[in-house]
Image (spheres, rainbow, N blue to C red):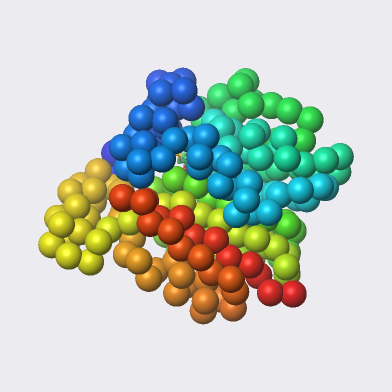
Length: 210
Ligand SMILES: C[S@@+](CC[C@H](N)C(=O)[O-])C[C@H]1O[C@@H](n2cnc3c(N)ncnc32)[C@H](O)[C@@H]1O
């Protein structure tokens, strides 16, 4: 297990992740606040009503709980994560009537095809050993007409990007180019693909056609 994955499994990180780690690290990486990311996630996923939502690699539930506030009765957010420490923190800090947490591996999701109205994965694909398999799993469990949204790392296609990629790789983090996820989404038949880049982060969302 590499350094990045070990860090995510550490109870000490889970303890400070939502209030200190995420706001600081993601602000440096993207110039955006957690509040902005959360509000944009609601818009990108077009959350409303009694939808079923999957928050993949949910960490301590910091997005899952927030997103669940936009659903009505019958709606539910399932947060899935691999780290027991993160899931314990999610259960302690981010429980609610329309959110629940399950342990699992993003690469082999324990859900039937087309289970969810909306599927998201924020700030995690660069940690997952086979991120493209995880992205394909997200698409598999999304119903026709549903929305998918990710945020992940970004590298420029220049010398700085090459050096950054090598430096990140030492800790087990991957930096993705501009094309990987839009191309994967397009190859899977998704439409309305939109990508926004902020510093070292990219945000991509799309619709699975009816
Ligand atoms: C940086 S946190 C992101 C938490 C939250 N989504 C956010 O945006 O703040 C990354 C999470 O990915 C989880 N993770 C890494 N590999 C995973 C895998 N293969 N399956 C499920 N979760 C995984 C880690 O346990 C960690 O909680």
